[in-house]
Length: 114
Image 1 (cartoon, rainbow, N blue to C red):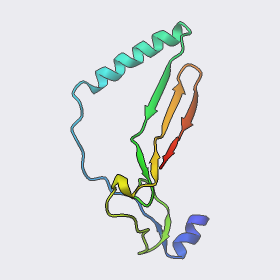
Image 2 (image 1 turned 180 degrees about the vertical axis):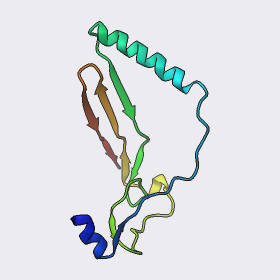
Image 3 (image 1 turned 90 degrees about the vertical axis):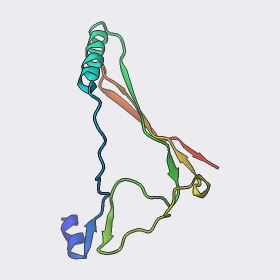
Image 4 (image 1 turned 180 degrees about the horizontal axis):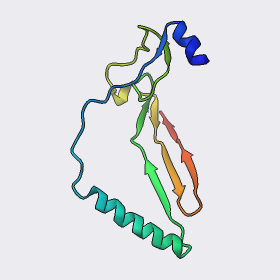
């Protein structure tokens, strides 16, 4: 219902458009199959298995970021053209830890300001 109202008011979702794709590693499936076998062996013997996923450091400030939000048609949020470190007020370093055996996760977003 909210989406319909926003659309009627002239809003639309805006998102980045992915156009460039690199080549896949030729052994990608073999790598994941090996890791999965090792994980299953450890879980079977009640050993803890965690997966840590770290994203790239993100500048904190008026910079272009992935994602989308509702904006009136033709009205995009203006952000800095360049992502220079000197223009940032800090960095965010998101990471998550997932316990595969317990099916639990923790997500952290430490921010470093200067």
